[in-house]
Each structure stands twice: as C-alpha cells, then as structure tokens.
Image 1 (spheres, rainbow, N blue to C red):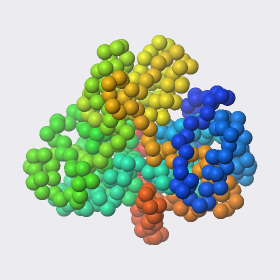
Image 2: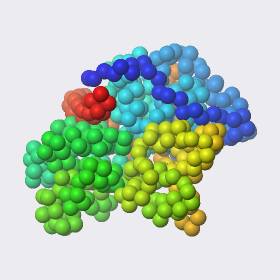
Image 3: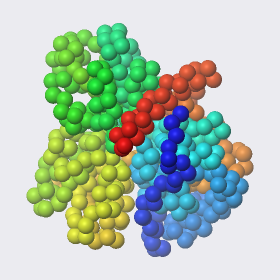
Image 4: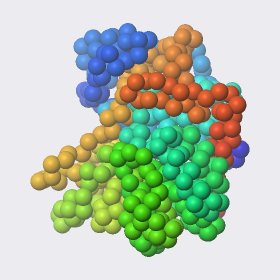
Length: 446
C-alpha cells in the first residue's frame, strides 16, 4: 500500500463560520426514514425550540463530547462539500474534516492512528475510505440511505454483463476506469482489468495513462465526465462511444447499442457508460452565456454536459471550485455550476472576502433552480448524534458499518455483504485500482 508524506496531515479548514443567529438549515427527514435506533435522537432534534448554533450545539454536545472523550484522538469525523444545510460547519466545529471525494478516500490511509472513522456523506465515499483503511480501522456512515443517483445507475448487476461482453470482444485490450462515484465492486472490476479509479480532478491523468498503454477504455459511470475528459485529452468525437441509458433495460452489444453501430464501437478509444448526475445535468450553455454577457466568470463541475463545460470559463472538482472562490480577488463575480448546498456555502465564504457568488441555474428565465444533492442531505444532526452516542455505548447498528463490497439498496435498506474470501479478493483488486490512481496523481506532481 502506498504511503504519503501527508500522514497525520489534517484537511484544510473550509473557512466557513456559523454566526450565532443563523439557523442550521437542514431539511428534516420524516421520522419513519430513520432507523429505529436513531428515532429517539431525531425526536429530540425536532423538539428543539430552534436550530440556531447555541441551541443545536448545546444539544449535540450531550452526545458528541462524551464520544470524543471516550475515543480520544482515535476518532475522525469526515464530511463532503455537498452536505446539506450547515452540516459541514457542524463537522468542522467538532474538529472534523471536509473535502472532496479524493481527499476523503485518503484519510484512513494517511491517518493510521484514527481507528473509528465516522463519515457524513454517501455510501460509495465511505466504502472508498474502507478500501484503503488499515485492518484495525473501522468506517461507519451516519446514514446508509445516503446514496448517489449516478452510482445507482451503475450498480454491478447493470455494468458487469456489459463489461463481460466487452471483454469477450476486445480481450486484454479493454481497461476499465472507474470514477470514484462507484461501488467497491466496480472499483474491483477496474483493478482486475489493469485499470484505475479516478476523480473529477484527475480523470484526465488516469485516462491519459490508460491510453498511453494502447488500451481501449470503458469509463464508468458518468457519461458527461467521460466526454469532458476525452475533450480535454483531444480525443476526436468519433473515437468515443456512449452506451445507452441503463434505465432502458439490459444492454446488448449489437448494431443498435451505440450510434454508428458495432463499427463505431470498434473504432472507439473510450466507451462511456450512460449514467449521469441529476444535479449537474440541469445546466445549459444558455445559462453560461447569460452570466458571461453580464461580466460574470462561470466555473462548472465536469459532471456537467459537454456543451456547458465548453462554454464555461473553467471547470474542475469541488476542491478546484472552492479554491477558486477562496482565492478570487475582491470584486470578482463568479457564477458556479454545481450542487446547490456547495454554492450556498461558497457564497457565504465569498461575501466575507468581497466576492460575489451566484448559482449558475439562478439565471432569470430558466425553470430549474440550483438544487442540492438530496441523498447527501440525508446525513443530518440526529444521525451524527445517534451514530456517535451508539458507538460510545457499543450499540451501533451493524447496518451503519461499512465494509468493502457491501451493496446497499438505498430504497429498501437491504444490504448484501460478501463473505470473507470474496471480500478479500475484491479488496485486492479494488485497492490496486485506488493505488494506481494515487501513483498516477502523485507522479504527476513530481
């Protein structure tokens, strides 16, 4: 397993603050959406007179501080930038870290002294942490229902029948690049085919690495990041084949599977899975031009459609977007196309620095306003309080424990867990795919 010179290095604080009179905005979930063990904490939360910091932290302290005292420096709290409401500020208030999926995945590896890792984000992120974790580290998710629509359209039972057909057709020439927004089962597919994991910040580095080996890349799951990565690398449009929307049913490789038929498939350097992020597909080039015509600089996430990225002034990961706001000169005006909660928090950070930030979709005349990731928002204060208190008591629900290879049905909460032998095989392949990504990224920095 690769090591890092950043061992024990904490994540950089976001710079966000919680003013005393600002309610911690969090869309409350229906009580029956909580696991039975968490319902008492949700009921207490709903009964609070308000959700302003003094009230909220007075309540959270009853559960978080005893857990921190119990676990000491072995406890690590993590959250993603896309967390709903002010929960990222809550995590930071208690000494936790907030970042993008790449940095979150590295936290167990970089912090071997952290034995209990509690993640407030989506399941694939927690599983990525678990894949790189040391044997004596445990990874827990505050809400197993926190999934990702893109990943849900690329479950292993959807992708593997297609990858089998592609391997039969192209043999060892096929290499899978799995975006971080996939399960460990697909990361293992990438590892087994000699491929790697990627994130939005390094997809171009990983795909370039694959193409230099004269491989044909199956890029899973996001078609838009796949196309945008191909554009960045100068791959001609006729060398990219996009598979059908997986919601339409089983995909068979025949003359109708992609535009141009099997000849187009055989010509392709990149074969792109047909999944997408519902949050980022609301953006249009017309929105970009509206802001630009008024003197605003437009920055977007590369899960946005190709025409949006081409029209924008820049594109990149959540860390890229956050740093652009944090480093923007006073008087700058930025329209950002990504998840709504992120933009709301970025606007607060920008205001303190004399910078204006707006959501790309808030341009007048467009039906779709900037929405947040609803599934990410399922991690809320009651889940954090309950998770830490139950862990302290030794009563944490096993459903919240994240092991490599776990498959969660986000609707039914049914979990399929691999046996020890199958899990060990999966970890070997998936970890190698993650390690290749780290090697590629760290190599590019030298």
